[in-house]
Image 1 (cartoon, rainbow, N blue to C red):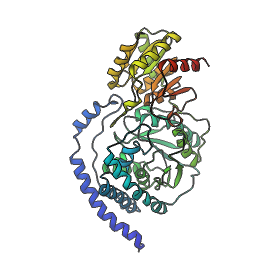
Image 2: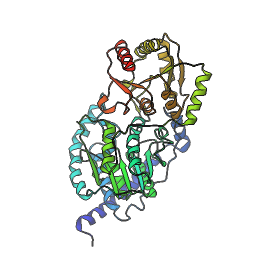
Image 3: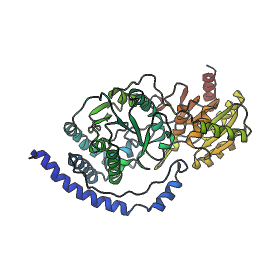
Length: 466
């Protein structure tokens, strides 16, 4: 017979399971149909890069196989506590205050004061659960060898690109393993075709742990993958729970404030420490025995993308050195952070100086929704510029950037992509800390809150000449 505490969890899980099914049925009734979802996704900022997803069937069946009842109860208890006190589940609360995976984001104003107050009151209660849950999920040891590995970093483009350093380190350490990367459909395209990857596990448009349906779909897909090692690069407590429920024997991940209780290889993360995000990812690789020295973010340029870009340059009459600039940034499905964007007039002044000093052509690019912003910058320019907003794929942007004299952009996924593709890259960082989020590249320059276009140009030209 099971011990009393385990029987208590089983009974509680039965109650929670009924609640989950009723709640999910109500949630899916409010979901748009497939046609509406595809149209919404088509209109999103990254619609040209990602394919629409459809609503999958939801079922709680099979959750009690083996030891599944315990995490179901823990997850349900966490949600119930948040619903009662704040009206938000764990991941929604973390994401609304700190970013989609719980990181503290500089310059973020968050929700209303009333909501933040309720969240702050509830936070100590959920934190009290973590020491208990860590006892339920004991720590483990690093694997001698792994045959099937999955890396989890669903969002966002810049984070996924920075995670390629960890991906390459894993491949070097486990050369014969099958490696999958679990990423959202808008960011998975950035790493498609990476030579260190065997396949990509599409986690959908939103963070999969922000809804019950997304949670269970992720668990089922992870189970189907039969992975023996998971490397989680998110700070979500529910993600750690999903990996445990997926029966992955070795689960390495970030443990920030006790939220990594579901991992058995926990890598401590101090939210107050000034450590680069890519270095944190590499520490997780080190925990599983990976070799991490001298590994940078990397996106090898595909030959076909290079040929396509060369043909476009030839058609545009560009036959000399060129500078690429992306005036957008801060856009992901469900999030718009325009505070990251350098003002169009100031960016134009900076670009005019750089174009004249380097005798270069200028190409302005961006996603489909950047057309107006690109036109605004072009309207302030004295120099002529090609406007290629929405015209290129991620692979083509990487190829274009790699061949440029200079790529300059805001703190955005495309700037991280350019740097990882080998471009000489300048990132303008207006709200985020470069010590944490600058491009993880040996040939990049991060300018933190530049004083003026003139001072920024002077620093960039000195860097180019060095």
